[in-house]
Length: 105
Image (tube, rainbow, N blue to C red; front, side, top):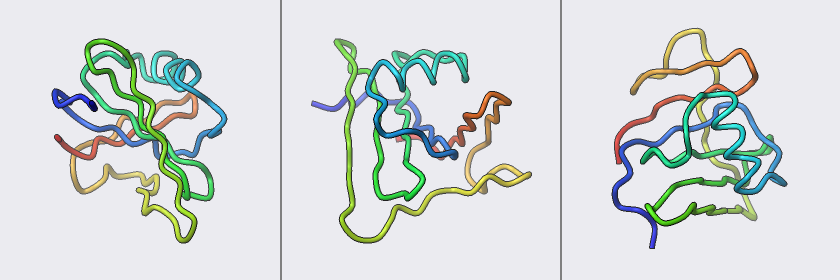
């Protein structure tokens, strides 16, 4: 069961390689954001075509990695702008991963 204790959701605004699994995405979270995947936050990543997303979340017992693939169309994704997104705030990082806080679950 997906965790129901999620505090917030972060969206990576830059695309990532969808070949990355739990370890690779967790390493991005730790190295580039200074966060831990076990902090009650869901981290959502997309590919360049925006037709796939991966969600990494901790349920208190292990890490969930969820994948969604669209066969038609694409996900609407926030663009990187100089100003923060209209909801929440932005956490840019010079190492390539910029995460926008979209809101609480």
